[in-house]
Image (cartoon, rainbow, N blue to C red; front, side, top):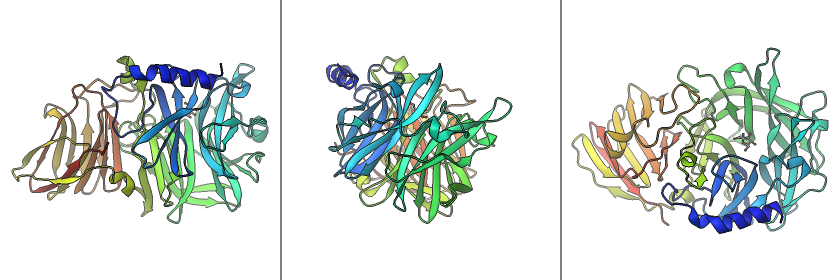
Length: 475
Ligand code: FRU
């Protein structure tokens, strides 16, 4: 039996045993098994397609397949058969992350095939294509980018996550890697390749090299033009904390800058974290049917307690909500796209002005504060058993350490964060069984929690009035 068939049979037979206890209502997650990065995001023939790093047989990371689902509205998802399985010599240790593009009316995926050559990890870029967007065929001449393309420049030990795009009638792809320094240390590095026909690819150019303050390797690069700027998104690993910033060991970072297409060099003008929460990694972008730039991320990060797996839950991992991004004043601002917002049944909720409020927690909760300088929000079952968001002295702090299962990570503190902010007047909170995504001034804060029973209430303390809008997702 082929590995794809084996995976699909397993999912079909076992998905009915998955408990709903932590299963989100409107965040994409796998039918059963482990998922991490979003892959191959694309709008193709009337559907949004999400592929994802997938191991169907267990709730832990293992030999990577590409899971697959599609959606008309980016909220309600239809699970599709597994698209790629590690069934070739060049990808027998995993089909790692990658992206999608339409070439001659076919949906083409570029992914990293992982295997071992002479006992060394060998990561090479491969393609697979499909006419119907469901059944994929790997290219007979895979890999299309390998050590040959890196000759005298680098090696294929850490060489992955190709993000493809078309510009000026040429195809390009950016690929993650690292550079060895002379004392055993490494820094992130991104390669760029070009192609006329998508099959034969140029020798590597170095798009950009990192410095030690931005981690030891850069994963999942994404390069695109947005609002007149060139944006580069990366997922750096083992970033040292810097004055309260980068307190997550592995995070997502964006750069605003300028691309020199002649020399294939990226010049960074501004660099910042993309999310100020606790669990957010491996962001990938795509264009929606109205040409908006949308991002999806894995709502988790590496080196953290895997609560779902420790509790023998049969699935693990989910994606963030789709977010529309724009560049304003050299910063990325995020918002939830209108078609996604339309999937929530939102109404104004009455509130009596007495400095302390109690609301029923809904999937969507929006607070507009009269006193923008000082407020506290508790999401939980009582104030003592909750996740706390507090704004004062131009700082927003989040703390989940008292609520739900204990989550530990390799960093100093995996449960608290603090972000500087001038004011915080309007807060939108999406709550979905085991995740919170909070939006404030175009900035996002994402985190997971695992608690049973679920948080049912939101308590708010503030002086002054608040207006409240809330509602649940339309199922
Ligand atoms: C990012 C990542 C990628 C890799 C994939 C493997 O989370 O480490 O670099 O392709 O996950 O599953």
